[in-house]
Image 1 (tube, rainbow, N blue to C red):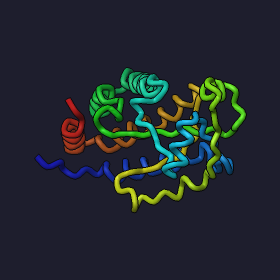
Image 2 (cartoon, rainbow, N blue to C red; image 1 turned 120 degrees about the horizontal axis):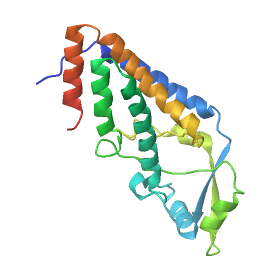
Image 3 (tube, one colour; image 1 turned 180 degrees about the vertical axis):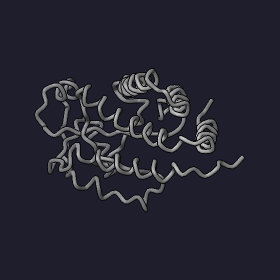
Length: 206
């Protein structure tokens, strides 16, 4: 069954674009050089292929990073769900809890990590335990030159990691609250409510 057009689409698309643009402000101007810590094997791989290979998120050194982000999102959503008085918003939040991990079967993600300093003791301890650690410097501006036209379906983002939990929650809450706002405003009538629930039921895995 085709999904009926909803007037929510343009509003949500605009909101998503605004949030994506605001995330760039977390670090609007990266330092000139970013350093990638690696061992001798990693350095030879980079030099030999002239490529920097990203790692699938499933195989990161710390596998709990994705689970941590999902748990924070679930916490924010659960808090809003407990306070929701709008049927459509409640349904949206309830279903969001069952699909909070967007990486699980919906999108794939590859990660490469960099540091602003080449003098981080804990990084040297991690990569030079066998006497062969390296901090390879890359010009940060080069990451923004990766052409989407040459890599169809692949988006490359350079973002600074946010470690403070209160800031992490605030960033997640901004996204959730904006979605709630548009759903609440756009589903006041019975017709709009039917469209919104139908859209949710057809796009969320059961």
